[in-house]
Length: 421
Image (cartoon, rainbow, N blue to C red; front, side):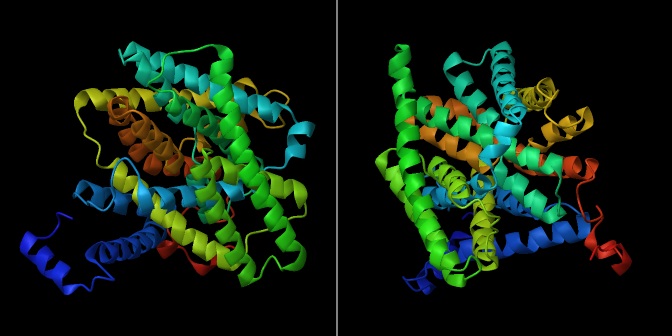
């Protein structure tokens, strides 16, 4: 890290025991600072804690922290995949398949907003003379909303209602599309275009391998829930261990760890349809992993190189993406069970970009360093902006839809009478 003089860094490195190491100390301090910043941001600004986590990572990344290597690899990559897997497993468990059978317009909304987002970003970047080989990966990154950011905003605002549930469902679905196509596209980034079947086969391979791992995870957890209490501490440990093992196995076999976790959550909901909430112990452990994930995302994204041209393209991408998501949800809104006003707030709630987008960008860089560099020139600044700004927009959307059970005011300035019981 470049925050301290080299002499002091050398002294600290020699003073630390080999089993500890200076990077471990820095990461521990970063997590402590992120936790404190998240609390202060919520208490004194009334914003979600994820904003504080991201701001700490941004400051440290801009200061030159060297503890996060880009593209992600090794332990950093696994921790990112584990954090995303935990979030997507929970998101999949909240996705009842029967809902789509009773209300197919939800699927229509999902396809409309995802397709329109891809097309809008494609044509916008084409107008800026971005190379065609770079446009498609950036458009795929733009499709994915962030269930991780959105779920944290929902928790911090204590929101519930049709806008909240619809936004979480649509964010989960467009993540499914983006991850599947991105992992396949990354594997063929430097190959020549082929026929339909040659391009379709890798999609089936990624989905098939991810489905197998997800099914094994769901069956293992369903068997455990037959004999273990959902609120047990041992159940929490078992759940985290299975998700962690599934993430590692899916990546090793050629599948996608986030996809396997998402599919596992959906299948567990099918096998165990009774309402089931995450144990309190798991919530604490998962919060630590997701906090680390948000800090890591902002540290890496803050290392991007900014200039006027990049800033212009990034702002154009963000603007086109925002308009397309709102328009896509509104386009298929008739018959979906939500009002036009609710459709507007749903589109706004899907603004965040975060860990999913970073994982997709990392896969492109690993597949093709040259093209990956061009992709991340735009992707990383967009992710950095929309992790923070997206969380704020999602908060505005949930309060605008009047689905939060707590007043939007800093906790430090509210009276006990204003706090809901």
